[in-house]
Length: 490
Image (cartoon, rainbow, N blue to C red; front, side, top):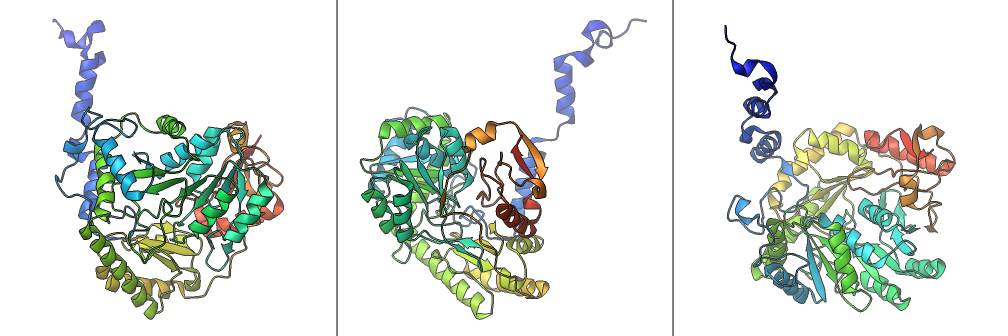
C-alpha cells in the first residue's frame, strides 16, 4: 500500500516548518484571548478604588478622548511628525512650544519614562571621574545612571522622620555644609517632590548650588503639575534648576512611560544632552506616547485644564478633611493629590495595609514601612469619601490600633562615598550569603524594595554591624520584598 507522502521519509510534514506553524496556530488561542489582552480586559471590566498611577485614574481624565483605540495614533517618525531629537516636524514644533510655555531653553519628550531622561541628564554632565552629589533616597534609575557613566557617587543623607518612616526635604543650610565638605562637585541631584509629595525649598537650594558653580538636576518626576496652581509649590524650572525631569503620567494624566526633560541656562551643553538622549532613548519613539505627553501639558495651559486641576485639588483637600475628622491618621504632604495614610498608629506597616486593602479592591500606589500613599490624580475624589472612609475604618479595627514604635534611623553619615564604585561592584564576581553572615562584606547588588525603588543598600557599600541590624529591621517591616540573603563580592 502506498503511504501518504506527508507521513514518510525526510519530507514528513510533521518536521516541516509549515506543518509546525500550522499546528502551533491551531493550538494558540484567538488574539483576543491572549494573556495580556485578557488581563487588560478583565481590569477594564473590574471597578476597584483605583488610587494608583497613572494619574488619569484608569481613563477618568484622559488628556484626549478620541479615537478610543490607539492604533491610529501609533505612527513612526514620518517626515511630518519627526521625533524628539529631530529639528523638523511636528514633534520639534511641539517641544518648542512646551519650552516657551515653561520659560526654558529646550524641552524634550521621553517615551522611556522619567528613568530614561534622568539617565540622559546625568550622562550629559557626568563622566567616569565626575563628582556627583546624589541624595541617599534617590530612585534606582539614578543608581543605574552612575553605573552607566562609571562614576562613584557622593551620597548625601537628608533628614529622616523616624515616626513617619520617610525621608524629609533637604534643608538649605545642610546643602551649604555639604558643598563645603564635598569639595569640587560636577553635578548636584535634588529630589523634589518625594513620592509622598514632600517638596523642597528649591529656589534656595538652587541658588546655593549656583553660588558654588554647581549645575542642578531636579528629579521632579512626581511634580509635573507644580506651578500650575498658586496653592502648589513652585516648579523646579521656575526655581532656576538647570535640568528638570518630569514624569507626565504621574500627575498630568498622560499615558505611562511619558516624560519630559527641560534644560535652561549656560551650565548645560545642548549637544552633549542630545547625544546622551540618543544613547538611552528609543530610536523608534511612539507618536501615540508623544501625543499623550503633548496633550497632557497643553491642557494645563487652558482655562478648562486649570479649572479641572482646581477642582481636583479642592476635592482632594475635602477628602483629607473628612478622613481626618473621622480619626484616620494622615501624614502631611505638600501635594494635595497625594493622600498619605500613616499606618504606624494603626498597628501595621504600609506593606501589610497594602496587602489587606488589595484583597478588598482598594489599589494604592506606594507602600512604605510606616505609610501607604494613595494617588488621587485627576479623577473625581468626591466619590471616594464614603467607600474609602468605610474601608479605612475597617482596616483600623482589623489591626487593633496598637501603634508601632518609631523606626531606628538609618545609620548613615551625612556624606559618604561607596568603597567601590557601583559599576565596578556590580560587574565583579559575586555570591549570595545570608544577611546575618554578611558582616564586613561589600555589596555587589542593591537592596531595593519596589515600589518606589529607593535603594536601601548600594553596590560597593560595606556591610557593618549597624547597617546589617538596620536592614534586618527593615526586612521585618517590608516582609518578602526584602530577601533574607544579600549579594556580596566573592
